[in-house]
Amino acid sequence: MQLQLISFVLIIWNCMDYSGCQPHSSSRHRQHKAMTGGSSGCQQSGCLTCSDYNGCLSCKPRLFMHLERIGMKQIGVCMTSCPPGFYGTRSPERNTCTKCRSECDSCFNKNFCTRCRMGFYLHLGKCLDSCPVGMVHSDAQRECILRCSAECESCVNSDTCTRCRPGLYQMNGRCHLICPDDYEPNDKLMECTPQVHCEVGEWSEWSPCSRSGRTCGFRRGQETRTRQVLQYPSPFGNPCPEISEVKECLVKKKRCPGTRRKSDRKERRNRNNRKDKESQEGRRERKRERDAGEREDSDNRNKTENRHRRGHDSQTIPPEDGLVQ
Image (cartoon, rainbow, N blue to C red; front, top):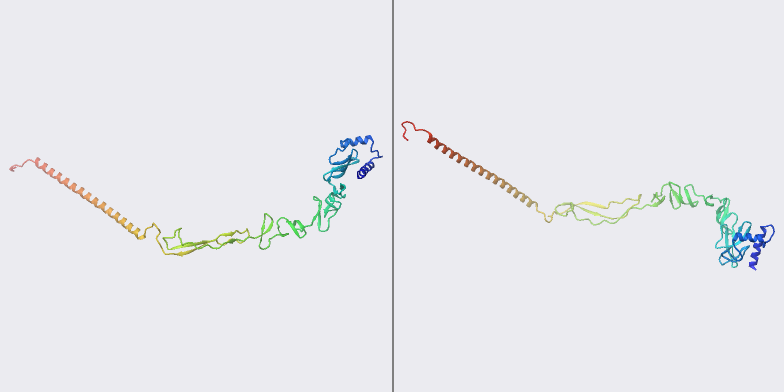
């Protein structure tokens, strides 16, 4: 009975689009075949029952029946989802596609639009030609959006900004030119973020007294102690205090292992000096001895030469008269 009723409705609807109702005329039958490319039987996928002239009369489970207009005629088509401008309704008997309201481009049901056609603006599922008080229309979105405060670029409501205009910093839904106390501007996020102050640990014990890296060979030195940074500060947070300290210290002087006493060094220098002095005196004495030896040798040579000279002279002189030789 239901299939007969749907078929009767489709036939009546199609008859209203033509002058005279002749559903079995050969010309219309050929026209339908040309449009659908079908012959006797169901040619469209998804159809449970159909006719060559009226298309699908019923659909397989979970598919929607949609009346599709082709020229001056409408035929039944089975679809997995309804096309834009229609919404689907399900019932135990059948699933159908129903046209949205005239001001809707798409809708969820008869009373809830999801997008409006040009000239209307969506607000709470309705398509309005003008937006409520406190809101302005967006032609790009075809929606009514909140009228934000002057310092906001976008907002959730008139009291809560989500993005501020350039030069302002957002914090807790408000826009600030200067961040409140204990907050600082973050130019990357354009937000006021909490300041982070430096935190340091406890002081270490004082180091042993030392001087130039040694712990011996001196009386006056220095002791040091340090502490670690636990939390480095943000750009506007409190800076870190000193993390190292130095103080003077006085200890009993002690010899470093492997070093000589000052008196030993002095004695060694004196001994070296004496050796140098003795060496110098020895060299001078040897020189004097050499000089004396050379003088003595020279004197001996002179004496020898003189004796030779005198002997030679005595042999060459003639004896005088009257002198007996």
